[in-house]
Image (cartoon, rainbow, N blue to C red):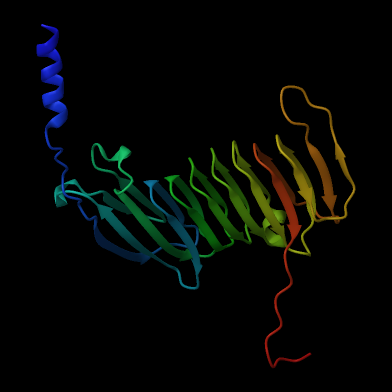
Length: 259
């Protein structure tokens, strides 16, 4: 019996391998625009793909979605845009079985009034918020986060890196940043004022000449506290990776401008 079993195995090994031909992903475009009231709120859920938020000059919201898929058109991701009064909900629904295929994704670009309240929940994909002055709540699983804000924010990631450029008004409104396993880098406007509270299981690097104090803590990293100026603003950062806080660079002079 042993020679027969070996012959069967050898026969299977000698059979030519067959591979399915590669399938190129198909990209569809979805557009939407509509007005949003002065007290408007935008909520976004995108489990896979980029979310790019931009502060605009008008009172309208403009959305552009790039839907990338494999397979038949019936299995593509769906973008559900649901306006409800002053609230706009944008939800991305992946097709069944797509959680393990990174070719199935939706990249969103949303231009909205600068002072709009935003809640953005991402998953695997980069999340950006630039030019916003309203309250922001944002989160990702492993996607990187990039911020340029003049309003308050609560931003968290499980393992993604966070980079933030914060204006004086952002600290005045209060900013909270956290990444359980990633690093955080912050550029502060040179006129920013407020309290700083920083915790990290890695290094904490400052480009600021300020009086800081480290307090004792049990069950976690010790907080480092400090203050910039006399303002009542607040910046709190907690990360598993390195934290770096620096002054924002001065704007480059315009060629041919006044000295």
